[in-house]
Length: 135
Length: 215
Image (cartoon, rainbow over all chains, first blue to last red; front, side, top):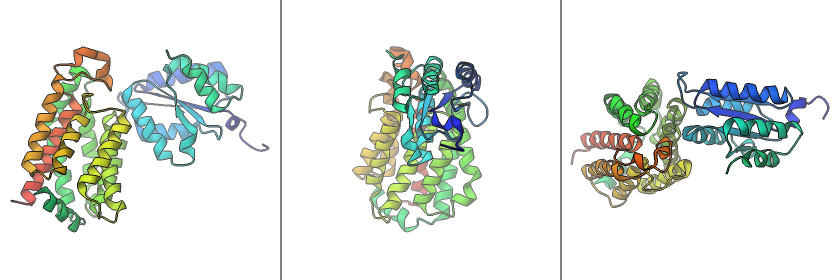
């Protein structure tokens, strides 16, 4: 579509870790793989900057990586998933229906998903590719 | 009787003293037990449950003067949202969902829904949020027994006692959810920190309400 952000045609990727260092590092790896053609954002740490996850910050990351094609979210441990679900709900309909938390390893999943997304694959395909990594 | 008591809650839903008192009671009990909760969490989790909960309750306390002006259901929803935004661990979304859902349920039916029903739906929402079931060694192992006592209209002292006993029963359970699940059988023998904070909060709320509504 003319005048549209070229990135927004591709599925976005969000990385959520308890550690900001892990989240940022994983995002760096994704960026190196696929450059700027996939919307990408990360969230890590709690409200005080310690280890943890934070629903509002995750929601902001989803918004930064927003694509009308949808957003695939990668999480590390328990609370990251719970807070990501909360963040998606807070986004509200209809956008919440276009965000999926992937059952996949954080780094490998995000890299595989981004590679798939960079080729213009649909959200379901991007998610499926990442989830193939899970036993 | 709790039934009478909760009816009063709705009648005085704009009662600033009630909302403020509940906030203070919860904040105090968490502040007094934060180190203990983190210690429990160090045994089977990542050791931050006490500090996370304290941060959450302090964030609620900062909003106190605004919250006390709201009707009770709305105040509960706002407190839940504040916990989601401030706690930073899985406990934030879980306690947040509990309060947000109780608030929504109470306000949705023009205040005519029974508290027991609102609590039931809220506890189910927590279970869905955490994808946990009773016996998984989580705060649900306190919430479900507490709900059971509310349904059978037990007195406040009875509810409080059941909550403490329910938390102790998590010692024998094997964690199925959260960080503790990685420990498998090694999680057995420790109180679940979420169940413990839930029992502490239940006790604080019951004691406060007992003072408000002497028998």
